[in-house]
Length: 193
Image (cartoon, rainbow, N blue to C red; front, side):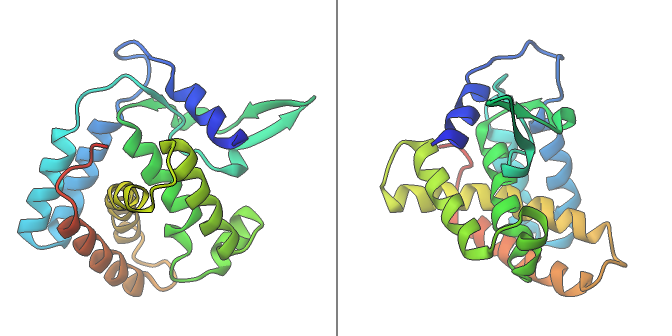
């Protein structure tokens, strides 16, 4: 509750044009990049879905996870604000999905090393956070929005991994993220919720 209440307070702020980067422009770049690594049909659909998102000046942290919130003198303090941006909240949810699940899907120790808690806790925290953010216990709705977030998340992960070919397990990760991205693009018709 505390975590999502803070996120909603951030998302309640509207920034002026040009004050911070527009995540939609960034995501269009990601989509263009990964289009060369997935079939044309899914690449075209990915670009079209990102392009179709309405321009929004909703303020977003851009890398919102539990390690970027500190408590100082009983008050919350956000850190790593270099990722501050504006855009549709699906971009924030995609980043959150990666932080809690995406980065550690192939190696569950990643979440333990990064966040300090295990994979099962991270999955549970993500699911509870998504329900709280959407204001519903409707599992079908939550999974539908999660799929939209996964489109953004896997796009980022595939791009990131392709650009780091010497990283341990890079080829396995590329194949995995490519497969998962294609599957989820085929499941959704819009990134809006």
